[in-house]
Every structure is written in structure tokens, then in C-alpha cells.
Image: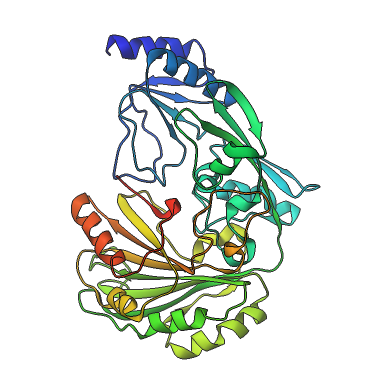
Length: 411
């Protein structure tokens, strides 16, 4: 232990109630492609601990890196203090105001479980294990974004700690920036109050078809069918499509092993009968191998896109587009090479409307968001190759911008 590290450890131990350890304490980080290398890690127990960490770090000239679930980790701690907020995971629901007070370490699964007994749901995304605070700071493209709007639109207040102390913000520049752009260096969000929605009928699930062998060009027709289907849909229907070239590995199910698979994830704010009516043209256009669309409990949101729920190494990026060029869609279906997942989310509807209180969310004028994600490490490709694949996937699309919520992995 260096003198600087010892000094930091001693000063922090005297000021905080949470655990202080030397180095980067082992913990749950969903993104395993990069690792924290801090001098000291503090498990914050509340905003007072966070304020103390910022003060001590400032006095020692040490950088502070904030960590909760680690899904969106891009720049790991390199020295200084790793501020772990994952223990600040309390969720309190106020049915009278249809709102929830959510700690910095809480996940959407925590919020869903707390809201359900009150007949309420959150404007959450497709992965229940994602941290709420970080998700909201990027805007939050939820499962029903076309009917709910961006998740950040539902934020009512934010508790933020900086070197001047703890404060609650409900408007102004800081409130705008924290909802879409995120905190600056020296700012830490410790809690948010979000509006909840009535848990009216939801319908959701996935439509799956195999495009062909993973190492051969796939049939682009189902992808074009989805793109055509999205034209003219009501705001109640939110969907996205992904194309996944599964490797030929023994631990995968036989029907996926070595196959290129297209999945449409659908969420409808309405009954199954209403969803069936809107899905009928898409169901008729493609011979689907699997169809799991049905009544959806908000606590079971993971089944819409069936994304991996285990920690792994990955990186990704995205572009916002005004439309989907047919040639670009062909490239998505027919590309071969190292494994990389291509996803397209349908925007518009409430996602394109101005929020009641101004925020800094990007993408309100976009029609779609196209993202690419590539795993690496553990015998797969190296990060540089994965980054190249992501760039190649996105290149054919005419971008009008990008979005921070779909930028993953090492920068």
C-alpha cells in the first residue's frame, strides 16, 4: 500500500459509515470487458457518505468513479476512489402521488417489485437488472417508449451531491442535464423521484425466425417485413428487431446453434386482443418459428427481448436515423464475420414529443435507433476486432445522431 493510498483509506474510514477497502473491491459488474483499478473502494451507505467521499477525494487530488450495476461501464476507475452506490438500493412507493423514490443503487427489478402491489408500473426498459439512476441519466428508452415517452420524462426530482453538499433539484440547468446527458465530474446522483404509470393491461413477447446458417448470408425478407409493418402503427405499439448470428457452441440450444436468428420484441399498451389485431399483418408476412407474445407482467419484462442476463464482455454503439434504407437492411441480414448483434428500435410516438419539463434527451426527432453490440474476450474476438465489427454494421445507415444509452464497453 502506497503512502497516498494509506492516506486516502485512513481519511475515508474516518468520515464514512460504509465499508472502505484498498483497491477495487470484487463485486457484481455486468460489464466484464474492463476492470476498475482504484486505490480505494467505498461502499456508500447514503448521501452523507457520498458527500464525504467527494470532500476527501478533493482534498487528496484523487479522481472519483461512480459504480452501481456496471451495465454501461465505459471508462473504469484508474486510481483514486471507486464510489460504489449499489447498497443505496431502497425504493419507496407513494400510491397517492403515483411516484417512487429510488436510491442510486436500485435496479428496475427493485422498482417493478415495489410498484406492483399498488397497481402501478415503471417506465422501465428491457433489462430488469439495469440500475435506474444510470438509465435515467441517458434518457431511458423503455419497453413502451412510443406510448410512455422516454423514462427521463417521468423524473420529478433528483437528489444530487457535489462538493457543495446535498441538494434536491426539480428544474434548471442541472435538472435538464441530469435527464439525458448525465452528471458532470464531481456530481453524483444519490436518489431520484419518478412518476409511475397505472398497471393497465400490457401485452408483449417475441416473434422469432431463423434466417439461415450463421456463417452464410441470411434472408432479408423478415427484416423488411418488420420495417414495413412499423409504418402507420399506433403509439400503443413499441417494437424492436434484432439479428443474432449464434456461434456453433455446445451449450446453446440445438435450434439456435450455428444459426442466424431474427427476433422481434413487441410491447403493446393494451389487451392481447388489441395486440393481435395490430400484429396480424406481421404474423402473416413471416413464417415465425416461435411466438411468445401474450399478457405481460411488468416484472417479467426481460422476456420481450430475451437479452443475456449474465455478466459478460461486450461493446457497442448506435446511430439515430430518419428512416431505414433497404440496402442497409440487406447488409444487416446478409453480413458474415465475427459474432455481432444488430438491433433496431422503432421510435416516434410519445418518444418524439417535447417533455413537460425540458430535458436533454437525444433522439426525439429520430424514427429509429440502430445499435450494434459485439462480445469479446474469453476465446472470442479481441476488443479491436469487436469495435471494427460494430463500426461496419452501423456504417451503411445514414446517421442523424447517436444516443448515450446504447454505447457500451471500453471507449
